[in-house]
Length: 420
Ligand SMILES: *Cc1c(COP(=O)(O)O)cnc(C)c1O
Image 1 (cartoon, rainbow, N blue to C red):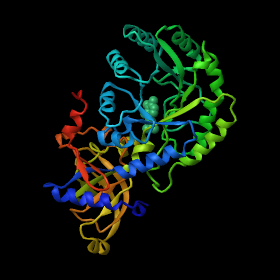
Image 2 (image 1 turned 45 degrees about the vertical axis):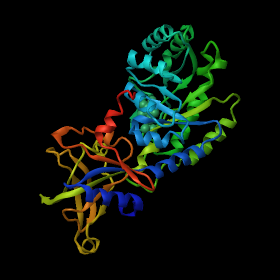
Image 3 (image 1 turned 90 degrees about the vertical axis):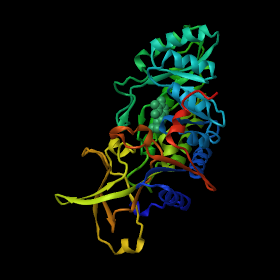
Image 4 (image 1 turned 45 degrees about the horizontal axis):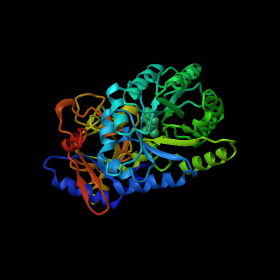
């Protein structure tokens, strides 16, 4: 199926140009920025009016990715001091919120002084700490309480953040206490609730049911507040999955948006709904291209040993899937005449776990050919253990339609420091 995947021409050009510029065999990430902007705009355009789209930057927080998405989304969702630095360095300032467990006092203070829109509070202890910091800065801070609701059977997905024991949010059983704590904190103002219950949701119908469940609960949650009229926002998190195994069959985002619109139109006082999407926004724009260093057969299994590996692109190993692989032969005519066989695609690490994909039927692969792994724009390089075995870090090439710009890792890292 990867053979039906078309790599855009400007990405192929950028890969070839980079290969020629590399002294050693290459391993690099390529990001299609025009495609990213177009995809983000299409997602935003499909939303019912009044529903907002934030980008959860942990999926990919490279400066060029944030700069590209910021103008097309309504805001950014952040979870650390480092992410605050990246968001504040963005060329298009957007509203941003701070969420996540284990927030540092220093980060909460930094967020307030740098203009955070709202905090998503995760525990009663955090409510107390946030109150103290807001009081010391003499400000009234908007907060949403993150809920870990009990989910109805059949709404689970692979990676659950709620409906089960997790460090995230506040159990529904303790919600009344949490709402009371916020209501009694003179420097905090409750403006809404937040639920990010799952990740890798590939089924639109199931996500529809999940959102319907939140909206059904909404009036009860809201009624716990001392001033329900101030409680207007329901953040439904992210969690829309990417179908890595069948790239042509993806989540029906427009369908979900239409269903949500119908559901909201039946409500007496509908909340302001906000999505904070990571994976489904940035995954499609990324490509990881690696050069074949060696081919071998071991105990009957064919291996393509490539530059790079799971220390640069941990996603397939983290999710336990066989990533689609596209073969770019140096000599297409010779490749067409070559043998077709199943390959296991591995990297340079000295561990049998360094597998990018198994059972990839490819024709006429030889040393020096390139393999391209698409759908690499989210939770790819940034979740990887890039320093393992002291290999150099891969280049990241951000391709715009007209020109490309390469941001070496050192510069990308330096962005995490205050820009002065
Ligand atoms: C990770 C995360 C998201 C984004 O999740 P995706 O699955 O990438 O869409 C949104 N909200 C919270 C609180 C998260 O932790």
